View 1 (cartoon, rainbow, N blue to C red):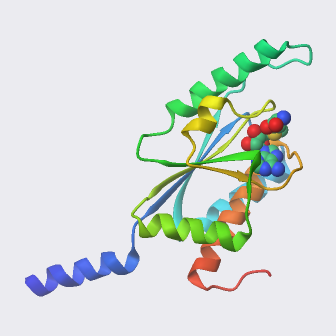
View 2 (view 1 turned 90 degrees about the vertical axis):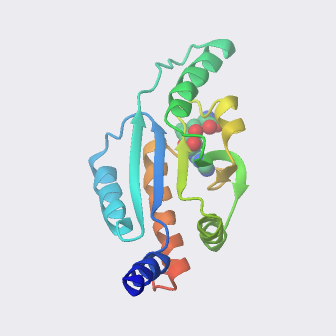
Length: 177
Ligand SMILES: C[S@@+](CC[C@H](N)C(=O)[O-])C[C@H]1O[C@@H](n2cnc3c(N)ncnc32)[C@H](O)[C@@H]1O
């Protein structure tokens, strides 16, 4: 019996923690070609992590909004985002002004989180006006993909590809250079 228990234990040690990655986003994914790409990378990530895409409604943000109205839009969207994030989640906000990293550095970050037993990770993508200060304050890390602005729908696909690349790097598995 003892032997059976220890072999089950070893199995879990070998398998490691189940990594739960949520992508919390503001705004609908509309483009068919992006939907296909996102479905493909979500499928490819299946053996490595449980991927949960949480799509939240955006606030209307017409061109003529004042500064304070724009702030209000971000605050309301931010409240929706924060309501979906539990206290034990490691939050990585996607922000143009955040820290730029290589794919290997992102892979090392994810590896380190697993080492520390952090199994819940949320990547957050803002709406057309970006993320509120409250969301940025809650974030453990702010990740920039360059100084350029990408649409939130495309950002979702780029992020998933980089997370997939990170797992391949960490497992020493081949992937495009
Ligand atoms: C259309 S952008 C928002 C642009 C907004 N003016 C801003 O400064 O954040 C929508 C979201 O996509 C993500 N995003 C866009 N470009 C990015 C980049 N280069 N690096 C990281 N995140 C980016 C951010 O989460 C952003 O809130």
